[in-house]
Amino acid sequence: MSLAESVRKVFVPIHKEGYPFIAIAAVASLALGFLWEPLFWVGLLITAWVCYFFRDPPRTTPVREGLVISPADGRVSLITTAIPPHDLDLPREPMTRISIFMNVFNCHVNRAPVSGRIVQQVYSKGLFLNAELDKASEDNERNSLVIDANGTEIAVVQIAGLVARRIVSFVREGEEIEAGDRFGLIRFGSRLDVYLPLSARPLVGFGQNAVAGETVLADLRSQEPPRRFRAG
Image (cartoon, rainbow, N blue to C red; front, side):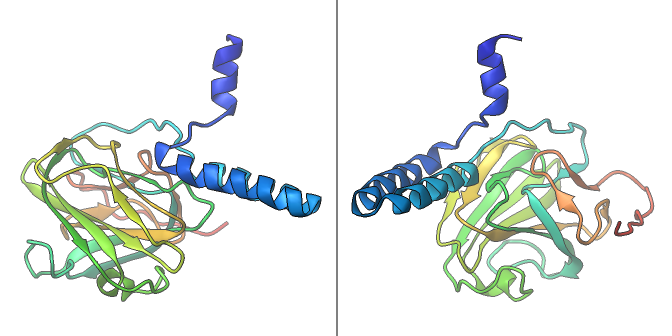
């Protein structure tokens, strides 16, 4: 392995959305250092954390028709049935909803759960309640995508939280997207909801840690019975 390859494996790529925040943190660290040297080291730690927050590591996505992949790094905070958000052109009928909560230490680059065409994208202004609350799905600021995956419509919703104040989308309505593709980012702590047909059996458990672009949330084609989980 060459030295360059070794360095690339150690230093995880940083998403370009993070560059302005890293620059601000670095300049602030220098300015504070002129006032009092210990503040420089505090600022340097904060700058390092900002770099860590905006990391964008490569992921290896399972590819097979019917697989639903986690769109976010984080903890599976809820698996339930719910009516999809009212602003989406989906039937007002219950769907399976899997929620993934991202804390400030998770990677916040979001990835497509399925391959297909984006048939709807809706940005909704709202509140900044704790993203772990169930009502955050309807009350908080959010950006929603509906993806047509070979005739099955899947919704994925980016939800802002207490600290998050900016949802960034990299895609547009009408575009084709592949499972695992980057489609957006939320700054500083938030949640993603995935809405699936009731026939889809979740393959993750409450409290499980999911990895964006890698963890299989459900299989639209499999008749596998629900998995059982235990905390260790």
